[in-house]
Image: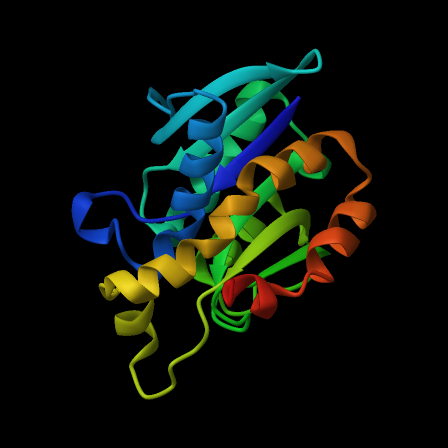
Length: 194
């Protein structure tokens, strides 16, 4: 069984913010598979489906970003899922906008959603997809990540969503080192200019 988590903040006012990149990526994937993430349990919206005989859970925690780990832990406990079988999709200030960076382990990088996951699951060893939102140091960090973005910037942020179906399918079928190599070596800048 696998758990795929898109991080974001619940509520209409956060929809088109940088912090909700994980929600949007997961929504794009779900749409590609004709899945509605609309069941509720443990303060999360979720859906299940089978991929090559394996049960997969798609999860959007509905507590605010800083408490996402509580929801992730509740799902891991209920469905008996280990950290090796989760994938967390999250925005990342240190990755260029329109780029993806995959990691197997490491620090939270100051991201409060990841910090809370690590506190709750008691490990930093879990797979993650980091969606670049760049870092505008001229703005307060909180205002920047939860601030509304222009349509042009949103399009650039969402440009990586075209990889959602392929990347998650790869996660479900390939060794994660191979998945990291595939997406970390992409030339996203040339893709953006197309």
